[in-house]
Length: 316
Image (cartoon, rainbow, N blue to C red; front, side, top):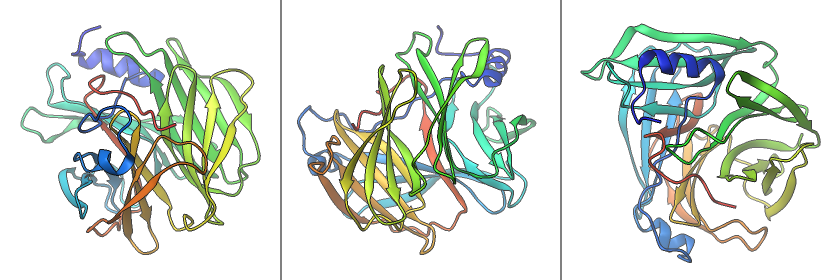
């Protein structure tokens, strides 16, 4: 599989949800490094957002002491003003033949999910002739979270491509995307009505794991084995103080560590944490401080770069 895709090839992959994406994990740190030491090695999180005006900026948050933040790119008028309600992970491939790159992922507008994609020109401007919103389906009005996960050892094809959602009634749903079969093998698990938001923290050959907070303030990991039927394994990480966050952006930091950006939309604040390999209440969490940025956008998501370049998340 080549590292460069033609525009036609990418368009075909978009329809099945199989365009690959992987995160840039920052500096690699030796196994066994503590969460605090790993974070000090200049790891970072890339927080994308959708503004009220439909723009698509990317905020680079560095784990310096104190944390720093700056917008590294912003593309205007990608979506209709004020209409995007949720966004999953958005991926970027800068090496699409004949273009300046591609951004793609799924968004929810109202109660409808769309596959979103837009291309850049070679001078880093949005190619307005190639901005797409392709309807996936309705019934997403009560969805409070969704994302796409991939287990992919580049340059091999993705081994697993999963879609996850959380509904307001506490139902977690998983679908599988495979070549020729998009959104197949739907499975559900109930009992998660207390969860406020969640974010992917691990993607392995045998399971995906999410970090989740509750409205009561607890913090949990939710491991979802790839076996059928869907049977999540829940572990409490902390008892309290985590209720303020409406969004998490998570990035790998070192071999076993994780960088977690918690976003409190009510106060428009963000806080950065270095988290050791999750192990229930024994998990090491080090607060790195408040991020000097006003988190005023209505939608935040994880932004991943350079498909296949970096290891997958392994926070639990």
